[in-house]
Image (cartoon, rainbow, N blue to C red):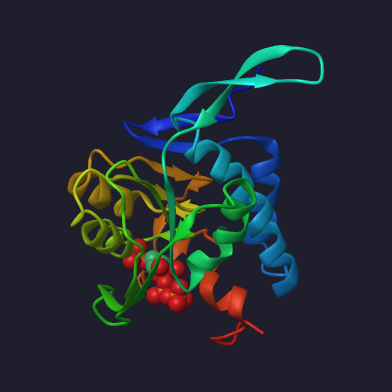
Length: 219
Ligand code: PRP
């Protein structure tokens, strides 16, 4: 049996499931049009969501099937999904399919084109209960600045447990993020070669936000 998820660095996991890698190839291709891009991101998001939530805690519950009494397991932790606007919205539908009761918070972060540093322009986070499991969603972890800013913002609330979920990560950004937050796991579909001079992940998939929203000349 081939492992579906592999730990590449301490706390950094890539989803190797063939279905996930199939969707990733669709996302990478420049001929993939917007509707299919969104659909492939949602399908890939399901694999990422399964991997990212594999350590959720459960408790035993008593229940009755049509045949007899038995036991089952029920999740115990409140789940909060935090897509980073805009591109993080691509992963939200998949997580909501699996966790329909999740609370949702939004962080608006855009990269300054010159410095590549993140600028926070919107924040709307629901009340975070002490045992909340927060999943920060952003397809691209490039310099790592946006994910770092998001986690720093969310960690103002003590006792929460955060997981970073992305489609692609660049080694440079991962290193920065792991230095800042060694205890925050990262789940990705792939770790790419690196960043180009404009801070784009190479080979990457282009600008996920533009491709999903039809901006920036993405058609
Ligand atoms: C992109 C991407 C990430 C960020 C990654 O967002 O969606 O949020 O850059 O870069 P970093 O790791 O170097 O911070 P962008 O600023 O293009 O905004 P958008 O999602 O609105 O398109």
